Image 1 (cartoon, one colour):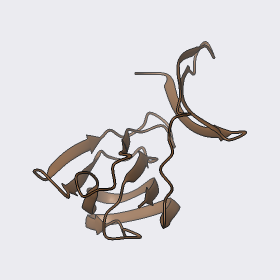
Image 2: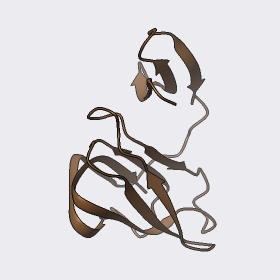
Image 3: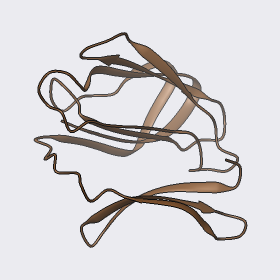
Image 4: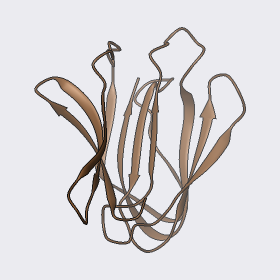
Length: 139
């Protein structure tokens, strides 16, 4: 996905995910998310979340997070997102560093089910050095 930018937007109440080729400025993908009806009871937003040499815990605003958005916004090194689902096996995902600031890997999770079968109970980021991220977590 070189030279492509992923955007999340809520224009006039119509959330959408779009991917734009940054070289040609052509939109290569768009998905409207008009069927999302889940209402968050609490939200954690930090568009300048920083980690420093080791493991940083992402604060969950409630016991179970049903929406998670993390975008790696640094160019120094890759980071690893460690997640613990409410049901299932804990896992990890590596977010690649960006070629330029703000265009690194992205972790996106959403589940409309709030009946104990979905969501995360723990989120951490493992890094090397000082890394910046955009983080939004809701439950």
